[in-house]
Image (tube, rainbow, N blue to C red):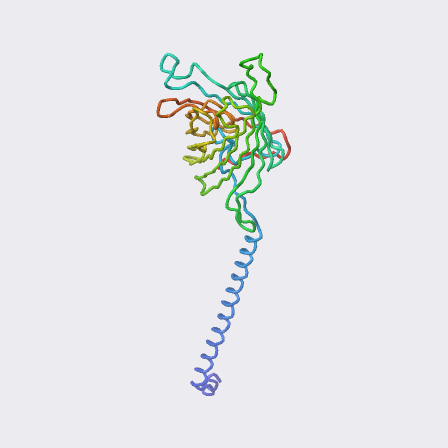
Length: 319
């Protein structure tokens, strides 16, 4: 029986059957491969579409809301209270008798509060010329990629300062408004990488009463500052304010500050060297007289302690 079956099947028919089988397998595999390729392509298109429809915002351009003396582009989170204590000791060239400036110190104590993620307010008292200050910081733009592609973060900071020193001549007619100073500042910042951030700070300072007739009431300056991270909790900072010639007070110079930020849990310690004793915009931008080349350098520090007092509070990310 078996022999009869083999006699009925011809070799050519066997070869044709094998060829047809191989062709069928090839067609099926090719169809499956095309389906897989199409599926992967569809998934990739969906991912790209989601990335385009989503917006990723840049966080932690700087470690805290102050760069050194001046503001950084950062805000305190909504419902977050940030208590700050700042010290500026005397000049290093005071020598060993004054313990290289440590015998003398000026201090500012203040609190900042985040009303919304884009709006914060702050008040403070500076022993330098017994000055009170208050400010608002409004974040107008935020660096982002994706659906909204914004290359920079932009904030606006108006400040008012009140000098409460006794009048030099109490017999002269003095006005309360003569004690007031106003500052308007735009901060434009960009985080170029995880470790490097820069910002520029065009600034306008107005004083209602100038000390000398020859002094301008309006001072214009251009600030630049940056941060370079060294480790996760340590960064190197620098800040410089250039006063525009023709719009500066007599005998003043440009403020230059260099320091480091150290983060330890809820605290941020900022240690720095500067040629300015003032700790508000009017003081360090418009009234700096120290010169680095002459050793008029002051050691100082800022301490920031954050308190959560709102349900939706959010701290500045430390990365």
